Image 1 (cartoon, rainbow, N blue to C red):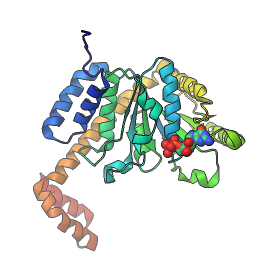
Image 2 (spheres, protein in one colour):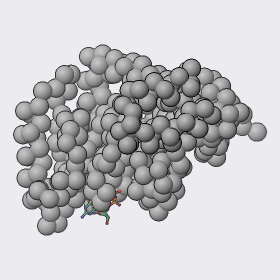
Image 3 (cartoon, helix red, strand yellow):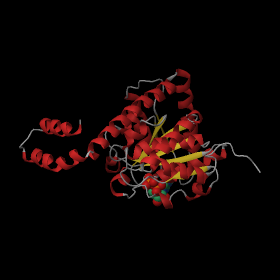
Image 4 (cartoon, protein in one colour):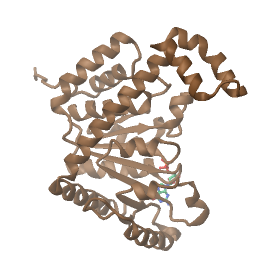
Length: 317
Ligand code: GDP
């Protein structure tokens, strides 16, 4: 019998481990933290690629094409989603199940649907930990996907080595869906659907963004780029792949890659502290009992917010 030294090497084992870190049960949480400490030496050796874009831009089509391309080059690909809708409603903008069917069936791919429900620490905490588990399981390309709504792009950019923004080959209205500031966060812009009638328009949009990107001040050596592709027709995926690797190797050479990861680790620690404290605060019985009354008082203007915060914190200390 073949011995198996990596406890996460099978997809079911990895899935079970991710379910464990998503659990809110105290004993599971403890077990999860032990597991994460154990696997830590096996983490960090992947390329973490954040991908965002409005619904309908072609994220899942792109991820499928890009993922299959990476697998053909000998890589193992994990896809994780940060779905801001799932925390509140248990629903999913990213509607994972029917997406990326070819990739999902590939032995060298692992697709994790976004966690549902607003559990301890929020969706991004679990995505970060899932990312570490995938790395320990041998996945060396991690795609972290999010929709361009809410706060989630910033969260994804904070856990990725490179941040890719997918755009539609339209101007004006279609691009209104993109939140301000996202273009500035992108290391790479890819105008998708550059095929058929949309081809010429996609090229124009690419040129516009390339010009806009040149005007942006960048801190690092990497100058963000704009490309076109057709995820549907599998065109331009190779150039996206090459550009991502160019960016990563430039950042590695300059030391920016490691610096970025170190900053992300510290930011992650503080996020954990804040989230844990807030959760404990909200769950504190006396705080929970007083909260509705004090919130009402703030709403009516009977008490100033700072005094309300102090009153609630006094229950907590
Ligand atoms: P998501 O919501 O961002 O994940 O977008 P999907 O990947 O589900 O794609 C939305 C729609 O756009 C689907 O009907 C796709 O077939 C289509 N689509 C995706 N990529 C392309 C492309 O490169 N070219 C064209 N013409 N259509 C595409």
